[in-house]
Length: 580
Image: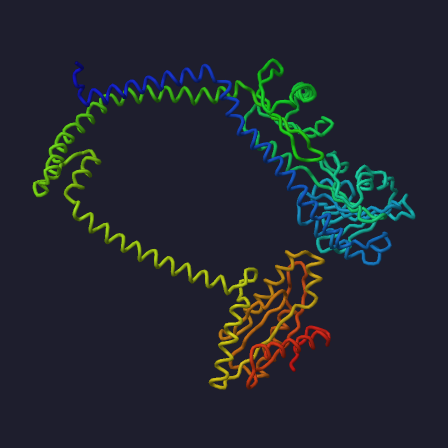
C-alpha cells in the first residue's frame, strides 16, 4: 500500500519535473526544428513587405487614376492646342494644382496627334532642374510648349509661385510625343488609363513611370510619377542586414532591388526563371550561403513579382539567441525557486488543515462558532471570510443589483436622447433635418393661431449646384453643402431654426419676425454666401424665397409661397431674395 505524500513534497516534485521537461523540450525543438522555425519567423516579415508593396501600388494607381479622370472630365471637349491658347492661364492653373497636391508628381501634359505638346513641370521636384534649364531660383513652374505646325521649335515659359511669367525662351526641339511608348500604348487602349514600365528620367536622378489616357482621337493626357515612395517603402521594410527585396516585371525584367550585388541579382533572376514560381517560400543556396526566399505575385499589370531573401544564419542567430536566453533563465529560476517552493508549501498546509475544521462546522450548521482564519495565502483568507460574511453577501448582492439597474436605466436614457438627436439631425451637414423642421413649423403655426404671433420662413437654394457635382465630384459638392450650413448657423439668431430641406435646399424658421425683418436677414445671409471663399470652387451664390405667416395659413401654404418666391428669384437671375 502506497504511503500518503506530504503536500510540500508533492508541490516541489511537480515543479522540478515540469522545469526539467521544459528545458529538455526546448533543446529538442531548437535542434530539430530550428530552420523550420526560422522560416516561420521570417514569414511575417515577408507578408508585411508584400502587403505594403501591393498597397503602395494600388494607392499609386488610385491616386493617379483620379487625377487622370479629373482632367479628362474637365477638358473632355479639348481637341487641339489652339483651344489651349484661347485660355492658357486656366490650363496652367489646373495642371499646377494637380502637381501641388502630390509631391511624387513630376509633370503633367497634353499631347496632340499633330505632335503639339503642352507640359507643366514641377521645378521643386529636383534642385538640378533649374540648373539644367538655366533658370533662376524664383522659378517655380516650367511650361514646355510645342506647336505641331512648327514642331522643330519649342518654347519654354517659366513662372513663379504666383504663376506670374518670369521668362520666355525658344530653342530647337527633337521631342515627338506621338513616338513615345506611353502615347502609343494609350492610342491602342483608347479611353483607358494606361501606365508605362518604370524608367529613369532624363532630367533628374530618379526612376518613375507615366500614366496616360486618350480621351478623344486628337488628345492624350499624361502625368509623370516618381517612384521614390515605393522604393523607400521596400527598403524600409527590410528589417535584417541580409534581407533584400527584388521587384520584377511580367517579362522577368528587374525593376527594383535593395542591393547592388550583381551575383545575387543574377542568381535570383535564374531562380525566378527556373523553379521559384511554383513555391511561395523555400531555402536555396546563393553564393555558397543558405537563404530563405519568399516569392509573391503582385496584382499589377507592370509589377508582377516580388522576391524577398534573408540569410538563414542571421535568422537562426536571432532565434537561437533568444532561445538560449530562455533556457538559461529557466535554469536560474528553477534554482532560485526551490527554497521558496518549500516555504510556501508549508504556508499553505497549516491554514488548509484549519479550513477543514471550519468546513466541518458549516457541515454541522454551527455558523455561530465559525472563526476567521488568518493566512498569508490570499485564497484561503478569502474563503474564510466568505464563510463569515455569507449573510452580508446576499444583502450586498441585492444592493449592487439595484445600483446596476439604475446605472443601466441612466445609460438607456442617454442613448435614447442621442438616438433622438441623430433622428432630427442631417448626417452630412450636422444641422436639423426635415423631421425637426416639420416639428418646429407645427409649433410655430400653433403659437401663431393661439397668440397671433408673427413668424416667417425662408427657403435657400444653392445656384447651379449640379455643376459643382458634375465638374468637381460629389465630395466637393458635399463640402460646399457643409460650408453653406456653417454660414447659415453663424448668421441666424438663437431663436431661429435652420435645417436642410433636401438636396441643396435649406429652410430657416424665424419666430417673431415680420416681412422687413426676414428680408433683412435673408439679404445678410445672401451677401455672406456670395463673399465666402469656398474650398475648390471658390465662389457660389444662393437664391432666397421668403414668406410671412398669414391668418389661416398651414405649413403647405406657407412653404408653397416661399417656393414660388424662390422660383421667382431663380427666374430673375439668381442670387436674389424674393417675396410674393
